Amino acid sequence: MLIGTWNLENLYRPGGPYGPQDEAAYQAKLAALAAVITELDPTLLGVQEVGDPEALEDLAGMLDDDWHLALSGHPDSRGIRVGFLSRTAMTVLADTTAFPAELRPVQVDDSGVTVTRAGRGFLAVEAEEVEGGLLRVAVCHLKSKLLSYPNGRFQPRDEGERARYGAYALYRRAAEATALRALADELLDGDGQARDVAVLGDLNDEVQAATTQILLGPPGSEIGTPGYEQADRGDATRLWDTAPLIPPGQRYSRVNSGRRELIDHVLVSHRLVHRVTAAGTGLPGDGPPGLPSVGPDPSARRDAPGSDHAPVWIRVG
Image (tube, rainbow, N blue to C red; front, side):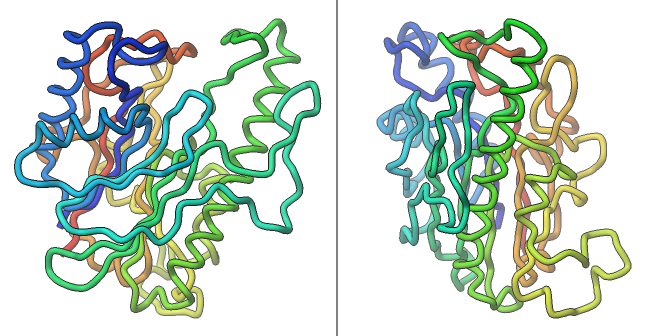
């Protein structure tokens, strides 16, 4: 069974302000995405940046067999949202943007505007495993590190503005990670040793980032440490980032201004991490993913086929 996550990069039907400008570019994008998914052959794939629900249906229609689809009802201001493609039936368990009640509103710009919810919904489903049993999975797309400024600018007026808006983005991403961790607690229900649970998606930060670490729960027992094989009380509620299982040369899912980053992750429960037989980015057996380098303007690639992210996946025995 292969479980993965992939940011599809602006999956819109043509003619709108964000997606491909014409039908030819749209069909080229769909064909490129479908070819990757077909070769990846996932049992369940969490997806991000679905702009038009119909576009995901178009993509599923280019794949072999019948696929089950689930989409969050909470898109962001550009209309993008998270979802799932699955070979087996799914039941939606949660579709939420709510911050924990104890978390105070978070400032998002110089005017002092605050938010009390995530910018994009977190979607959780329960799916049938191919080998039997049930798999609980949440997919997310946390606040981007690619900064935007007032009046649609992608460049700051000065370094002070850059620093402030970097802080605002970090505040939001940390609050969203906290909300996602609360959802993970519900899925684990204090029983991670017996439940197959995964939290996956575009975290917009790397393995050691503070926002990523929030999601792990109790410290200890990380992959590659002496405590990994030792049972402890934290196993019931802990999540393991499977990034250390990815071959070092493939440990990236995006190239930002020439720098390789692993910002897409698959985190799993105690029972599931000990069933992982392989992990990777891109396509199994293909080596390091060949990705374009992206800059600060997300609209620069609107007519490009494929995606600027690589899939991140685990194989479970």
